[in-house]
Image (cartoon, one colour):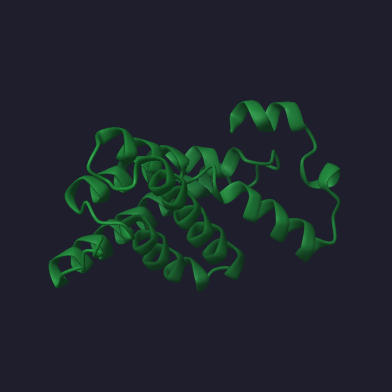
Length: 153
């Protein structure tokens, strides 16, 4: 199967969605910036990421759409912290990979919803690994309340 190529219009639409994600993050992140419970910051913004991701996937039904959204949005976040870039990019790639392995394309609505739903939860493993490596912390130090973090996620 020949992969679909992205048009200039597709790239512009993805860039606009990425800008909207950045604005949504600027609004929500200050509200939870001081929360130390692992996963809560990610989950507060998950609704915005899901909405904008599914809008992008519904309009552009091509494999790689979510990864491009993650790349464009992550590039803006790279200026704030490299961890956020890798976290967003890996989350977008992993969620798209899982949706592609299960559904093969974005033709069905279930594949679009699955990819959008998995976007932010797939950022948590990368965030955890980077936090442990950069700060020299153990898993139990990063995730102080595992049960609560799992329920939130």
